[in-house]
Length: 305
Image (cartoon, rainbow, N blue to C red; front, side, top):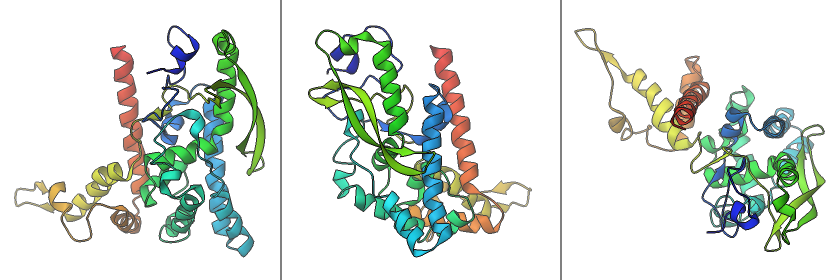
């Protein structure tokens, strides 16, 4: 297995994910992780701004509702290109494995303007990491691909900084190449092109990903949301007090078998809308749970190190 550090002869720890350069790596860029890690700077803040302005621009088109705005919203979601430069994910699970980026963009658009539009309009669904909770077919692979394209500018600029930091990228016969790539511009809220100088491996440019930005699973997946926050709410709705004053809850295993509570995104949406009627935002509760667990795990990892 030839990793980036072995390929270029870099010794010691590196601040980027040391992926295998000749194969897909089963790691996925996670927008929630980028938001929580907040480093390295300024790239983390830039990446989060790209993600937030992109989705806010798409949802603004939905709020507008005019034919031109709706066409623009869908078009913005159909500009994703297979993000092979990072070597993350698995190609058969990504855009190509699902019929192409335009198809995936249509899935997302039809969901945002269809069954989850109420969540969009009341401002609950507003972050990129929310999408895999509600869009069928969008899991860690597609989320990673979409996130990579939207955050490509900060990722490429981070890579350029690594090239400047480690002379190994341009020594011993190794070369860099100037390329023009599509990037999301958070200032104009449009897709633009920008030029970057990136390392080359086997004739293909390489984009490095900061440590911690990619994971084997998403922090916010539909399965995790359903198994924790959604079923927690269902438990409390069905809970009864015993004669002794003890709260009795239905087991989650039994809830999963109940009609209307089966695992899936339809159940997630149904329960979420029911919770909203009770003035409860399950998505906010889930994010608080995820963030707290992430902080706890990070603290434990730091202590172990």
